Image (cartoon, rainbow, N blue to C red):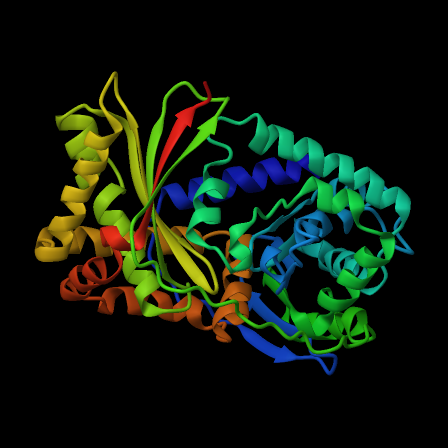
Length: 439
């Protein structure tokens, strides 16, 4: 099986190297089972591979303030085993059959997947149905994964340079919404949680009517429908998942603060603006603004601050798009002794230009071409297609978002880019964070 994976990877790489990336329409079939599970199937017979994925509409924003970290914890816990899969055997079954698997959690959703040779489609469906139908949630599994999560936090956050910057930004940008805490949550909250609380969290959120089963690859649609029905139809429907968005009052004045990190020697200047959620047109416009400012060596911030003035080692801007709100973030690390205020001034100058001047037609054309290339690249792998289809349904209630997104991007005008910068990127609407080495 390992040889199969190596040869397949080589074949795909050679194939892609010899052709331009062209955005192709993604055909798919979608329907609901009686238990509420939404199913999306995409057939692509170009390679003998299949991606089986389940996206649950639960993330850290669904947690209680005293029980943060539950969604991320379940990302780990649901690999422990089921009534029919012995503890510790889940990943071994996948690897023994030449597959790969993983999971990830955001503030808004949790995503599990397996990628197999296509003749193991049935195995992927069985594994995910087992995870959904009857996982074993007991004290041994909770204690084991509690230590795993603690080690992950130590490695990725506590002992990682700039590992806490997102938390430091979000807890200032959001004061009421659950986005204010880390996805990994509080270790104290996890330590104090009882087993019944973990079971209740699973029963509430990891149900078919709160999930999307997305399958992409070398499949036959009709036979796959029969397999999906056999493995998932018997799973009972859960109670409706009710979510109420926590509203944030607009930021009315600039918030300036400092945070300290014992793992860094070079400080950073960070700004963050609260912007609309990902299922809005404005979120897409903010992503284009990010590309103008910092996508590549010819971008405005990189050229000005790294190449020309040489006062920055790194500089960037990105739209952290989430379901309820987004965070538009800029950052810069100084080169030598450049003052952080100088870097902030440099960034603000470029934002002011976006607010008052239209980007050039040349920049606009380049922006559209970059996005089309990135869009096509994102849909070259079966796993990427499965995830994008699932996210389209989860966040837009429209799996066809995968085919409509590029047209929306192409319809965005230079005037809209200017107007969005003017609307959202003002000094009185932001957090300014001096991220400094601990003394």
